Image (tube, rainbow, N blue to C red):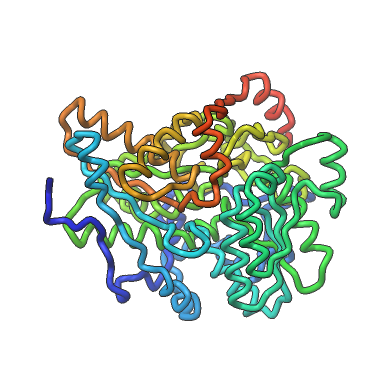
Length: 455
């Protein structure tokens, strides 16, 4: 055991990033532009500003500025829980008897319990600065809704959350945390919006999806003066804000002379993964270093491993811009048996383009394997991980065991995106032996992909 590296690598306050990193600036082949669903032309700043805050629209379209200053008001908020620790998983290494060194960036050390707060506070700040009354949003497993409710409370903004119905029912305590911070939480699809009513009519008894909830939240924002819509993943602006994860991780590794060999992140819409890997991918794009980067997604919603790289609507109601991404089709609704987040039908345009260029690989894993890894991690490392994070834990363990077989002493880094203390319904299902694995058939995916827009 190398005792020269502490269990937890803490950075000093002055080592916390002062700028976000925009990986698109170093990409020679950029992601394709967002398209206006009415004209099929690239979205302009004015058009995006009808949906998003003006400054967020600028960030969304900025492909050339490598570093963007973090406003001091946001850095003041970050100081409540950042810099976040990079933890050496000595106990897990010992249990696995692996020569690999395992590190995880822990993003659960705030009240929201996840990395989502990094972007929530930024988006709430820009909404307040613009003089808005409030914002609307969607949430899947509830981490984003919780984070945004906290951020809106901090800036005295109204917060309206459309929560995927199955999560709304499975996670009542996550819902109540949002309400405690003043948010109005509605199960989606609902009967409050025209799109919600249409989806309920088309899919009777549906348990919902992020695509459904996005459609409702966008409609709700458009119907209210002084409101804008905000999104917790997928968009370039969100990956920009989440780059603080990767920037801090790199500084912490550099502090002790550690070079990562494998970097692993869970992948749903791409916010955590993109934020973690951006600075490392930047080095790869500039020819300064090389890494093995692994995106891990649920087998029940496998957009990278089984989806198609094509333009698709970002929402089920088809009112949002079209984005070129790896997608299962905007009408794809994950099985209700899926117990975690990562329920989005598509993937970030940035992550999709990096994947298409071969700069990262993707794996899908079944949820029983995920919860087995989560349970082992909790028992060994003392943290109850979120189901989403456990996708990365599963593959990190797999890679560490592979090192045990080969004798390679690799440095494995993964993102522990949050804690699982509001996910006890899922843990109960696993512990009671009632959890199963659902993998969509080729026919189900083909049926959804057949509905992709014809461009």
